[in-house]
Length: 212
Image (cartoon, rainbow, N blue to C red):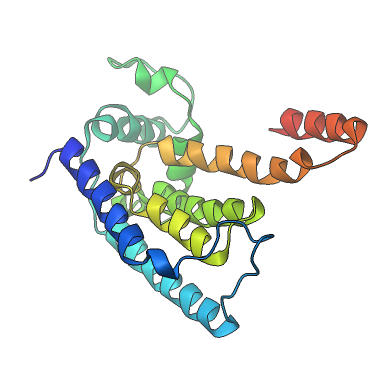
């Protein structure tokens, strides 16, 4: 099996190959310099393809048993301790990360686990769905900064197929969930970066950061 470094290199070279092969088909990066030529039918086909890809991703997630070190040492044991104790209060543990690390991802996983009839197949769903939301957010952010539809699809595709991000989307870690909140913040803050009224900008920035 390839190592993490070799898989990252394969990922990079594959995307370089895509750029080289389809270079002549690419449109200029900014929509204000060139109108977006993507037809409506093409966008519907793209949306349908993305939906199928997301469904296959969810199917793969529910068929994948948590296996990595972090999941087995403090993510899953924390959830099981909460279920056993009937409380999310602190408890005695031989791993500090079980009681010291942020709890948001595990609390969501706990509720999904209980609502799904205590099925362990539900554990990767939080990261899996967050990974898909991040893919959509990256496309939306790229469009918001002026990229064409094609460049937005490429940006989203590069994120979705990133080896480390895809691997973590099938686990119970919290990195992808944290990235989702950061991308949401960036998406909602971008419009105010182009606002010319400094007073309005300062007020809206303060409100957004305070809510975050």
